Length: 452
Ligand code: C2O
Ligand code: CU
Image (cartoon, rainbow, N blue to C red; front, side, top):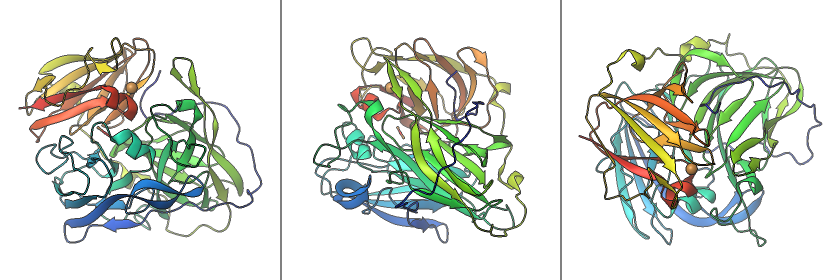
């Protein structure tokens, strides 16, 4: 079963390693936090020389860093982004996971920002917005795969207040933006359309296998984002306790101990990591069969070095991070829709390629809908929907218990299905749903839903 970010037991004891020579500590992206209900931030997209993938390379990035700055806003805040496009081609901004309007100058991916242009985004969050980990990335059709392969992405955290210290027992928050890329012989970033998915180098915050420090008994929150163009991570960390408290920016109602975390492109997981015994282990990814005979190989993603004395923020109080949510299975469904990933005649949804001027589904504001996404192809595809998150009710026809809302879910190959319910609340207008293998989306695996 290829579900969401859920755990499954796999017995595979961790190997103890010596501290690698020349270990690089995990780079922490700089944080821009809202004040007085507003976050005003400039994101300049440009080509510049930055540390990326183990060398200094000229890549496209936000504010000269991979990942871009971490934006932190609270529910009820207004996020104002001035996007400066100093790239030689169009770009734009998508706030992946924010439950906000997809219209006007908010999270509107139909708006493109040309080379040399500047665009202002104003994105108000509702006071009841979920708290959790989201992210931002370009979404200009025809350009985003290359831009993201080069490093254009950043974390976007919704948080009422800093939740480290006594109230939670968490000593620190870390952002881990996972990606994967490939380089040409001369060190430039390769073309994602011609690079095999099983021949990519995996990065955390733009680094090859950085070292993450933790102390025995210390608990950190790791905000994991899979910002890769087309790489599925299946993460495993032995020797330390890993408890998931949120997925796709929405808190769980119950904490979930995970042995293995499947994270498809677009998905996020908020993990509490509690240091076990002193020593050095790998955060690894395990093999993933994505279809067409392609198996993403196992390998280390980061090194976790556990030593020293834990800081003393008080006992862990994970319950402070959990939230109840309304079970949409109890709601009346207005419409059941079936949509399909198809490849007959090219990458598409329901047999046709993306057309931004066409409306593929017309939905009614305020209703609860049920969708079944069917995968008619020989490859897995992560389904992502903008604006309104969903609760998965069935995977391959088998009922599942939603742990929270999600906005991205991996759909199994060759007839795999995912059924979910979504409440089309608050935000009329057009938005897209698509495969989050960004190369597939750009080849046409994307469609438009209009909520009226
Ligand atoms: Cu993360 Cu339509 O995107
Ligand atoms: Cu796809």
